[in-house]
Length: 66
Image 1 (cartoon, rainbow, N blue to C red):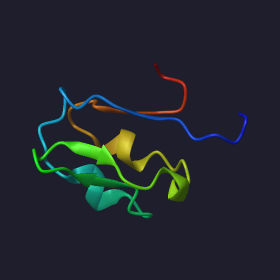
Image 2 (tube, helix red, strand yellow):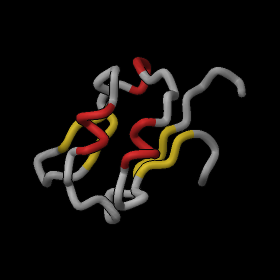
Image 3 (tube, rainbow, N blue to C red):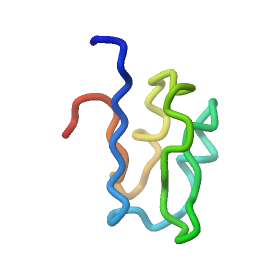
């Protein structure tokens, strides 16, 4: 990996439950005004995978899963 973090969000798959926000240890994610997930601080991401693992809607992909 080249050091650049890759986090992909599928907003149309997100139901806005907030589980990923709650489990992110670095506050990388937040819910926007439409209650959909958004990346707010990618530089803080430690690529732990908690967001991808916990998302019940499979709306988050960490690293190269495009």
